[in-house]
Image (tube, rainbow, N blue to C red):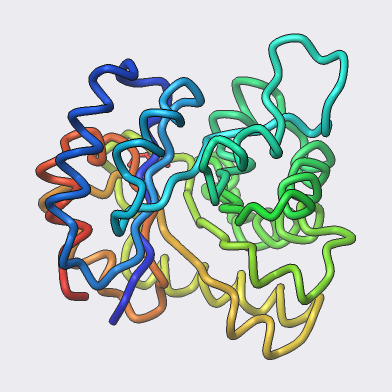
Length: 249
Ligand code: PGA
């Protein structure tokens, strides 16, 4: 089954290192049947366009401003990343929610700005360990979906991908179980079906992210409930990431 494999570089590498990475990834994934997206830092986008252009690998950014343009020193807009060659943007990653205090309201605004600029959005949702221990995971994730997608039209959901990333699994080596993942994907689909339609619930793409690595990737990503994966740490090694991108799931 064809999957969507997304690599999130976070704040790692410098543009000159990324050039070698991009050239290598483009070559190594030539025959992949999966859809592949890499999301490097903003400073790498020009290099990404130059060395991934014409390859099987599409490019995304890890964040955008909620504002379109103007006096917002230091910010980067949706239009800027689109013009720089990005087709995707990650919005609402848990590191932005927790370390940069991004609220669902702000995330909702960012999603609208991204969609208006023609970007595809990878919306991250997922619960903390405490929420999980309090058995509030389902309610928490459903509310994230509701708040983050408020006011977004059903036809726009074609450009929205939901990544379920339990916070306790990100960068920790702990992975959600196959049944946990299947259950959460179902919750996400049901919530979309409730807010929009059965069709929308069935057709929205749902990814899993959190401690996927070269040893566990095949088992996780081949889960038929999933449309693909969001990969942090393990995407930094181009050989490993290319193996994950080339797999026949
Ligand atoms: P990880 O990160 O694969 O390093 O756990 C995933 C993510 O934060 O998107």
